[in-house]
Amino acid sequence: MNIDYKALADKYGTPLYMYDFDYIENRYTTLKDAFAGKKSLINYAVKANSNLSVIAHLAKLGAGADCVSIGEVKRALTAGVDKYKIIFSGVGKRDDEIREALEQDILLLNLESEAEMKRVEMVAKELGKEARISIRVNPNIDPQTHPYISTGLHENKFGVEIDMAKRMYIYANKSEFLNPVGIHFHIGSQLTKIEPIRESCMIVADLVRSLKAIKIDIKFFDVGGGIGVVYDDEVTIPAEVYTQAIFEATKGLDVTLLCEPGRYMVANAGAFFTKVLYEKVNDGKRFVIVDGAMNDLIRPSLYNAYHKIEAVLKEGEKTPADVVGPVCESGDFFGKNVPLPPLEHNDLIVVHSAGAYGFTMASNYNTRAKAAEVALQGGKDRLIRQRETYEDQVRLELEYLEK
Ligand code: LLP
Image (cartoon, rainbow, N blue to C red; front, side):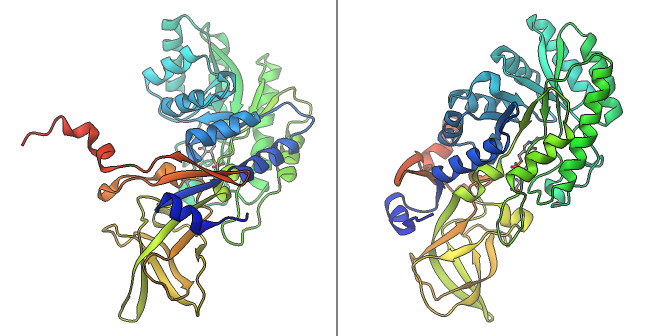
């Protein structure tokens, strides 16, 4: 990536998110190619980065969408994702969300409990429709990742146990309003080891075989998302290793393979730009205070996640500094003890690998406006989201203001 960070920061201001669309395309094609020879669909996990232009870019390449709210489903539709390529997951779908998803006739509603299945059946009955469903199975496998983003153990809230899944399939198969065509699991995010994925695939593929034996024919085998990326020095899973593990486990099954990568597609396509406001030293400890904050990019504060931080175009002897934002929380930092050269007001800092779970997890805490977003494609840059204004933030409150 040869990017003129300074020109972009000058043109669009900071804080700013930048996404390299060529990189995203490359990631998509690499993964899609690794599925060559098999029926497959890559359902981009919209939660990682739900900017409409990002979704549209992937949709044009042929991607589907994995959504976890009706809002995300609508984003996917707005961005041009084919409705038969959209799946709707999540442990807590409201009736109105279920209704709208059924009305939109998307590919699959992915169910996470028996109670939810009954709600979906009820809503489908009201609409006089048959709901295409998949069931999220919890294979009870330790994904060996951060506990906050691990989801495939029984102690997590996600999915149902194998026995329960089987009972649900039998019920759904008999129901006039449910059509159980898919199976799904997702064991966690930022996975860097193939073994937990392989084991989960095996367990779930066995379940598919035993369902087939009782004439329940699963057509979509969805392995979830979770492929890890390099933030620091992680060794990640090559696309072919990933797909080979899936191919082996599903050998002999006539299924379309689905996966739901989010981070893999966008994390390293993105960077977050912020400018230095001040430097200060407290009792020998160096702080670099920047104009971006935890409300823009919360991963370091929330998960102690590492993001490489660089002072672009600055030379000089590096000394460790905490890079912190203006928010009134001690947890408002992008990095601790980051080696940085001497910095001045307005110097540019780039926080790397910020394309996934960056902007989508942003908030307005401290009445800070959300950053602008730009795309870089074929050597050209373009705005894909305006910087939020104060007026945008108070719009839904002003008319109720009593003075
Ligand atoms: N499918 C399901 C059912 C999921 O729950 C997730 C992510 C994905 C797919 C996409 O996972 P990915 O390929 O991006 O790993 N905010 C956290 C990550 C939370 C992931 C939640 N589920 C972070 O910043 O690390």
